[in-house]
Length: 143
Length: 143
Image (tube, rainbow over all chains, first blue to last red; front, side, top):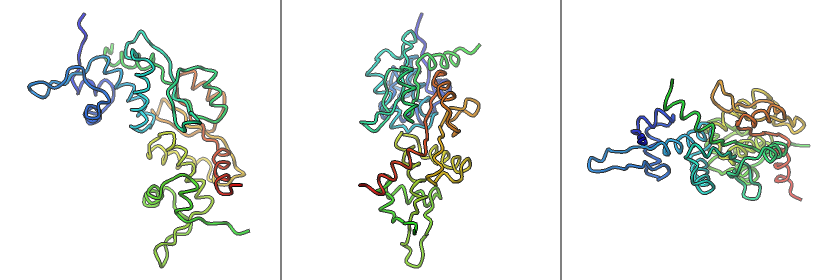
């Protein structure tokens, strides 16, 4: 079966991002469409893998995290799990406060570690890929 | 004993905010110094209560939350606990994902509720006033 591709507008509608965000992220090379501009200069298409990346960004921004934190966390996610865009992966991560570095860091989710953070009065932001995939697949094929 | 007051620079140094942020927040009426500009136009002084407000803003921004979310949460904190700037209060709150409203909401901290959120893969950002006060008092009177 052929992998479907999505126009900018479709990608925006599906992931809840704005066209302006998509454009900005192309310029900043945050999320780069698989098929890029050609002769006409307008043939920008997003793969399903790109939609996962957009959804992860949209999730963090919906919480009120800044673009900088979202971008950095996306890069960290790619580094930890290069195949995070593939639904069978479905790993669980979390953004957790790292006292030493004085910032939120993406790490593997573990419930005990997460509760220990809470008990120390520190933030935990779960990043569960299964939730990202599930929301996305509802949007791609709504029944 | 007289309440001490702090210049903009002192308030910035103590709370870790920038002078630019302090100015912006004065303009936006986010944190309004108790003694405002008079004849000279330069007599801006922050009370200890103001420093608590600045510290709460600085905490949220340090996590990577946007100004909008931090500002809204500060207003919510004032609404829930108008006396939150007074150290004996020391109540515990948290920013918790509210599915219905699709955003983080400030509510009273309760450990079970916080863990239930985590178990649902949703973020919890503790806002414990004792931590805010304690960090602040270390900075005001370092021994």
